[in-house]
Image 1 (cartoon, one colour):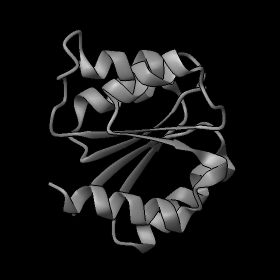
Image 2 (cartoon, one colour):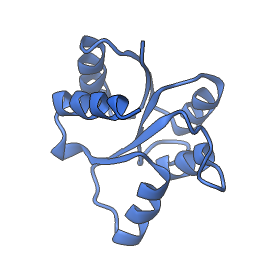
Image 3 (cartoon, helix red, strand yellow):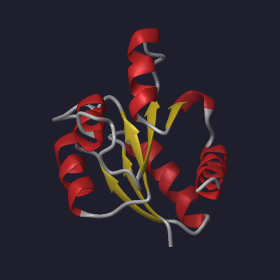
Image 4 (cartoon, one colour):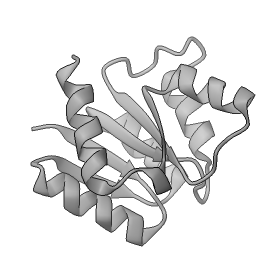
Length: 125
């Protein structure tokens, strides 16, 4: 079973994602705090991490950089999808896209579309 970590501090969005992902057959953990999410991601193996950028304690950018490492190859078997409500400046977005496997604007992606994106990402492996 595919294991997903949803790092999201907005409870409404997290609940929507979890409901849709579990309905699709995924095993999902949720972590609303950036520092705790980083610890959890390093202690457990996840196939996919949905990573919000704006989090308490530690930002999604800091988490992404810590998980990918200096060379960008940390956790090579884990797909990381950045989720945000803000369209980042081009330079910042390019940096995030280099480290992440996907970049989604939350307002543009319904929970069912998120499931489709994840299924497509998993089928490419």
